[in-house]
Length: 526
Image 1: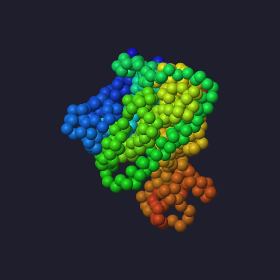
Image 2: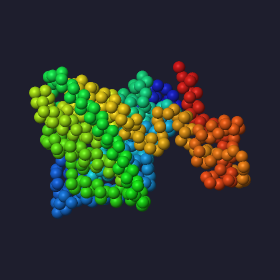
Image 3: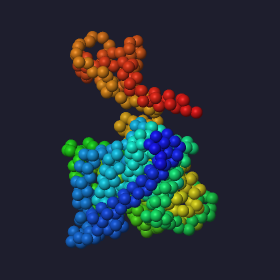
Image 4: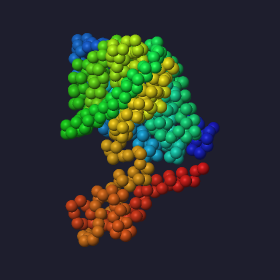
């Protein structure tokens, strides 16, 4: 029997923790999918309403198709207060919060996030929110990993690794894609491919995938039509699709945050009520375009299978951008991973059909272009090319698309980098003043204000010499201390002359002490 000390320090303890987190993530993914289906049945009478057209409620046909006006409102009345009261970080798409927890908080995520995120996202999706299951299950699995790390009092390195194991397990069980889970966690969450971390994440991902397959089956997510690249010239079309997909991925990111800004600007009432009131707008979108209801995987499959014409594919593409952005903007809870795949599928299928009409002897199956578009738009939005390649291979189980897929994804990622410095995940953090590309100690200096770390004074006095302001950053304050060649300076409230505190090198050291300890530990490591 392993002791808590062994779990905290030994390699066998780390392996055990990874297996437990993987199992928990797998079970969490199963439970979350059941919640989504259950709430969808309650709200619509169907397991998935997105592909039944303008149908009446399955259990209450007298309501006609008009019931979709109210399902987002009712769902919002439940999950709005839940998120606002218990875990506000459960709002939105979840992955940026996990990235921030790993990069800046030592992997610490509050335990209640797992439960609140599961309920809020399932209610949002079941009530018509046009978002994905993957972002929530990443946050749920990560919260489970962080909670287990806290229980055994693991150090920060193990805590971060447990969070990554939870994220990998969630993706693996949800998509039946263990490799994609591994690379998602390594590429986006840890941003580190160290051999030890890789091994633990693989164990968690495989464990979660085995549990997911036992409960959910082992069938491929999508079936690829017969596909071969007959003409080398077709790679030019794949390259063109990749370039367009990169731009579309960036456009999706900008539309998402533009709509969120508009909702922030327009809303003047309690935040807990925002999802319900905003749900009326979402209900109007669903009434016009019911294909936007929930995740929409059946619609995605129909698009790849060639069930829609080019015009309607483009309508679905734009509709998904708007519906997802509105869902997030009104305070909904759900992921943007699946919407980016949906948008890519519509773009690729439309491109493939149009290209086939122009050069029919050169172009293969339009459905293959739809699958390539899925990976390319996701890569353009998330800047995760390795994950994009691996997940599309695992979703289809078909090796024949790998070369065209790699070509399109590389171009999509490169072009999106040229157009925008941020991904759909990092932009959410940058808008809060958080730059994950900065070292942690530099970020602490540039984002913390003097007022946050000063030593308050109990005897206010008026000063006439050099002084600092409470709203200056610590980085700016240290430059003033250096210029004045002093150890500390008084701090003034904005627009006032009375001293409210003191700031000096001692306060700066207290702020940086956790980062300094991290740097010292890294320097001692072999």
